[in-house]
Length: 232
Image (cartoon, rainbow, N blue to C red; front, top):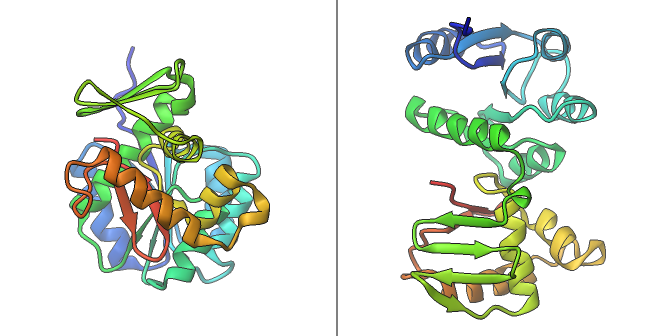
């Protein structure tokens, strides 16, 4: 018999108004909400109740939310979305590099949060895009088995670095990757901190792949943080 519960979401947040809001809103969208008000309790619940997704605030009363993310990532690949009033770029980068999948700033719209949750859950259910030989999004097709890229059936010729940058984003479609994460994976650890490399090559990729590079459909910017490949 099928489980009547929707996806189980663990919310680690000590603000009662946020918990009340999400209790109602996520329930209306078919999610089952688990709640925790501290980082330590949240880690315990994550280990014992095995949620499908975790939403964590950074400003917790006992330990910092980034520490919660790091500790969870030692043993779990469960999608993690940060929901925090800390809107500084450094905070977002630190959380993403600790292992968070996405970041939503407070105040937030429930619709945006639910959309980000759906992407994270879909990505987790499907597994890494690297396992799929062909990635398709609208007119964009990346055939990884044959190292070929097409837009509207027209083959696009990419340099080796452009291709590595694109396939790195494909492997993590829907997830924000920071400049340093991209530099480490595409160019290698010695290039960490050289974010201009990413900006230059991203601009080249957009010129080749996007119908309007100034208003990209596929290669999206997270200002000051990094990039994501759209997934829908």
